[in-house]
Image (tube, rainbow, N blue to C red):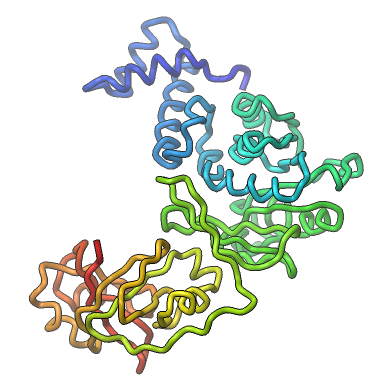
Length: 390
């Protein structure tokens, strides 16, 4: 890429695209008629599209990134600004003030580090992406380099910490021709997990990974969700323990629940009409903290996968959806037990039942207020009719 996309042209394209009845082809023709080169117009239109997607994906935390230069792959891989902010806050606690971002991409995490008062050296191996990175995060020292080729002997562990987000979706096959999924094979990440753990012998490491990843022994794990959607597992050798992190994009606050050395034992209650089911935030479930939360709330874990809790009374808890129990029955009776309702949602995450199978058996369309929750399997399987609390 010889030149960066022109910001004035991007603004002009955005203005025309925002007009009533505007079409992309019409805007392209208009900009071409003004004498702009085809390649420049295409780049401007693409930036408008990607910024629109980023505005939706990152709202409201992406307000400071409205004029970033983006790529399709980079936008998909970039940390949500509020998640990046959480990463930065953890690193600040370490006391080290200079971060080496080994896989900086478009700079989402590097920008958060800068905003948190840290110095940043950002590495990006692709020249075009590195040019966008330098535009997006001008305060960082940007190096166009593969992190596996860096001589880390030049960096003192007391002064630097390392952040890394290994690429986990490469298309190459293994030597025997198999296409093992990279996200399930950390040695096929770029850089590999062994490269990361070797650095951990000298440096504090902070690493992003998929939620299913099991961190090295003795490393802390943070299961992170945004607005109830599980986003990532974040891990570091600078801390220990298991943590669930729930980020609310409306308040821009991150709430953390950590493993307790002496958790309160949960109570045992049978599901009954008039009680309440609680659908836990997936960060809590994935972190394995369902039992601990149940004990703290004075309610019971139900089902097989730690997704649901049950209590005989309503208990305020910000990190669970609450439903009032109206009925419970064997799943074979679902059609007759929901016949009086306008429709039902069907929640099967705790069971082995297929959604289509149950939708057909119920004879009901989807609905926002009423739901059937299927708990367990086999002899312990139970259908619970619930209504969502306001």
